[in-house]
Amino acid sequence: MSIVRSIEVIAQSPNGFDNACQEAIREASKTLRGIQSFWIKNAECVVENDRITMYRVNGKISFLVEESK
Image (tube, rainbow, N blue to C red):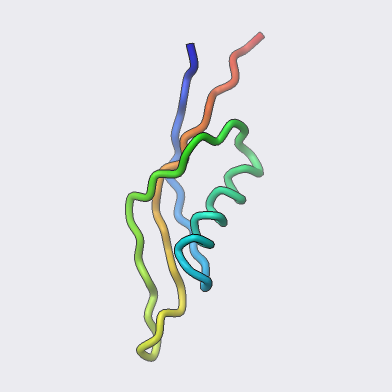
């Protein structure tokens, strides 16, 4: 039987939502193994002087929990 856990994360990028999602996975993978999915709960843009300056995503990263041996 596999056990999956999830954590909530927030990430941002000036280069679009795709890059913000990649940043979330990149940072999480520094301490997590077995990442399975990233579910986007919310997405927003920061606007300054009538221009989008930052893309943010809030979501849950699911990962497999390793079995103890």
